Image (cartoon, rainbow, N blue to C red):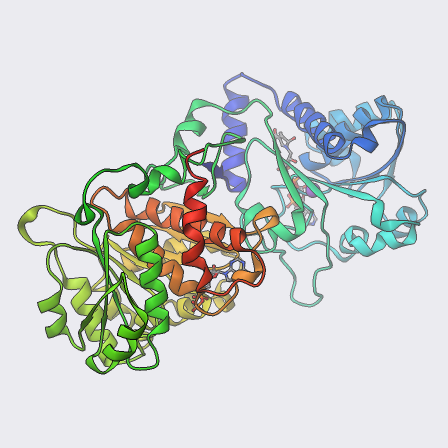
Amino acid sequence: MTELLTSAQMRAIELAEIESGAVTGLQLMERAGRGAVETALAKWPELAKGRHRALILCGPGNNGGDGFVIARRLADRGWSVDVFLYGDGSGLPPDAKTNHDLWLEMGRVSPCAPETIRACERPDLFVDAVFGTGLTRPLPDMLNEVLDVRLMNVWSEAQSIRRLAVDCPSGLNLDTGMVPSDGETAPRVNSADLTVSFHSVKAGHKLALGPVLCGDVRTVDIGLTGPDAAERAMVGTAPDPDRARLAAPEFLHSDLPLRLWPGSMIAKLRGQGHKYDYGHAMVLAGGPGRGGAARMAARSALRSGAGLVTVLCPPDALTENACHLDAIMLRACGDPDAFRQIVDDRVSSLCLGPGMGVGEETRALVAAALAHRRGDRGWRDPAVVLDADALTSFADAPDALFALTHARTVLTPHEGEFARLFPDLAQSSRGQRSKIDVVRIAADRAGCVVLLKGEDTVIAQPGGGASVHSATGARAVPWLATAGAGDVLAGLIAGLAAPETAPDLFCVTEAAVWLHCEAARCFGPGLIAEDLPEMLPKVFSTLAR
Ligand SMILES: NC(=O)C1=CN([C@@H]2O[C@H](COP(=O)(O)OP(=O)(O)OC[C@H]3O[C@@H](n4cnc5c(N)ncnc54)[C@H](OP(=O)(O)O)[C@@H]3O)[C@@H](O)[C@H]2O)[C@@H](O)CC1
Ligand SMILES: Nc1ncnc2c1ncn2[C@@H]1O[C@H](COP(=O)(O)OP(=O)(O)O)[C@@H](O)[C@H]1O
Ligand SMILES: [K+]
């Protein structure tokens, strides 16, 4: 798994390495600039042959310093290079100043202004080295104008001008994935075809607008990778409280075999035993005509590996459910008393919410589920997945829910449900806080794992451990925005968490989100929620690799 660093963490790593004497800032900058050029030429082999023209915008910090290295490296290859500087060359930090001066021995630096940039000859490569991890405020209007992709239209065949961003498209906050704005003018669109980042991916590359603006994100090793970084991002272990990670089969810039992750998170792929060893998952359903959501969750739990799955529904919904269920068992359960009689100590996971209805009855069943313990056999308490109506039923009193939740609970809200439980952390109130940070706060407050859905799904547990799953780029699955997809995810978590040998609940939840997305990718466009559980066998069949 890959670490997702904040800008401050990246600076701290660089500083520690420089202070240790292992490397100088100038060496790091040279490697960064060289790495950006090599990565761009590898992506666009047509630019690796012959001489081309680059237009490079440099900023007043070290990101600009990388830009001067890139200018020098391209000029060495015979390219024509136009360099513009935002700010004053004499005010550059030392390493950037050194590279600025080295470039001046080879070419010119012009002040950054829209008119002069538009008057340039058409470039083949446009390089944005204005701001990276040091962005502190919204871009000034002039920079918004020159970085706007539409400026390219002054040149012929604008579509074929390649846009390379150094560390990020300038204006993007690498902690949040948001583009800060002064609220008066909407920020313009600065997007790149290729973003070359250094040492490790930053959170902002994967959150919010980051994936859309950055294009293809590649990471260059600039020699900072140490055992510390490797160990902290270990696969399948509980997350580091200080470092967020990416829920993806990657490790230290390389692909990880799927059998190691997520394969090792799926008990049934590696275990032995009878059905009870794989646990009994129970899914609570709503009244007549509302059972579809719970049935899809139940099917997903059974497909993902629970040994047994039972749907519990109010007595008047028995006939409807019986018409639809075969391998999944069915019991009548309309209130907490019935729940306590039915749920024995072999029940190892519970899923509540999909289609249950909002109100007192659901609140009472949620309370009964959260109070359930496994008894004297020494087994873990059941995992309790709360989604949809189980969350909305507590909109008026979220603290009442948080008083009941325990460490084996997962809340799986979408943004709307999240806003009901955590109004001060809702998207509209989030300000410049990152999605990772608000989900961390939510997990601390709720005392359990919280998963906030989206193309950038964030999972956090109390104490700070956090993970991001990014359904973007090659893993984009817009067709997953379909009614019931969330119900299937809730069931998938319950199913993966049910076996006695299931890993830690946070790790199971991470794997579930990846598998959910993978099932959608496997099916492709046209997907409806019912298709997701049916794709799981195909996904599992790829995990031996
Ligand atoms: N350190 C290393 O060894 C290595 C670093 N590397 C590279 O360095 C980059 C980080 O460099 P950095 O810390 O200098 O920050 P950077 O992004 O250049 O910007 C800071 C400057 O911008 C200014 N500024 C900010 N926002 C602004 C705004 N909206 N409008 C106007 N001005 C604004 C800010 O001004 P201030 O806020 O201080 O007034 C300051 O002058 C990193 O992304 C990577 O590319 C690589 O070479 C690897 C080795
Ligand atoms: N555009 C998208 N790209 C990737 N995943 C998506 C997208 N839209 C929705 N999803 C995922 O689909 C699921 C939808 O869940 P939810 O909003 O609870 O739907 P429902 O309540 O209809 O089941 C979540 O896991 C979410 O992350
Ligand atoms: K940049």
